[in-house]
Length: 413
Image: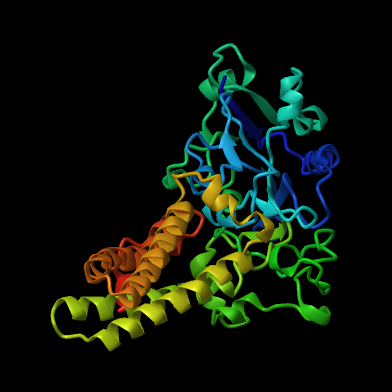
């Protein structure tokens, strides 16, 4: 079995029946969606056109969200469905960064990740997903891709189809017949500040419980957060910008509400404190090995390293939405995730620094010298492992930089 979807854009009328059925079937809270419809308009009257595109999880054969999840809360079933387990999720939001299709969200009620799971509970009973059943035009087709007699396989063989972001290598299993590139590519049509009937009454993720203003964006006391200002972009772009970036004058006139900032200030702060911790120990111990250091410098490096490493751990716990489950990273690890590998690296690094201090105080010179040598590679790994974690975040193009690990190493120095 290998389940997938086809969206037939020749038939979709943008009625939102799939969105409503999905929300009803899974009790999806207001403000977040597992399935939604995106409207794109092109041209000017009298030659204007509008297309409707259903968006959701692509149930990828090589799902990056599964790879990055530190506690196997996301997993690929034997039948090809990418499913999730509320009971294991720690709310680290790594999966939201890894998904190139923006299909995951943090449930504002459970504070855990969620997404389309192909209505797995219905599939168990031999039924089709709720969105397939309710579609009045039969524009959503589900089925077994490996069954050559199934309708979905017949359509794939007979029609030219597109997938979203094939360059990411995730092998998505959500196919579009006559898909519009302006709708399938997230940067082909500029998003609006808000959409009629698509605003939300409360924030999600880091903004849970905060009021929002009329454009659906979270902000304290009703004041919206200007995401462009946060990253140094001007509030409005010059006229030549739209002609350069959006040559077809495609307009995104309806979409799901933006999810706001998923990783908060704790993540850049953790990168900074981790860098100080690794760099302090690395420089102090390296200079000592080459005869240019001193015992006082080693102590300074070890103490600074341990203090900032403790702050790093605290920031990591603060950033997750289920801090009560933080230890799942160590006790229920998914070793393919660099978040887990990193957790063990910094735990080992902290243990070595502690052992170095104990051995120095106890006068165990041989142990101290051995710990000094071991601490250096652990300091380097602590500095650079986040680059490998960011590389697993395929939803963030600017993080796919092969020089990032070198940058983080010199940052610590």
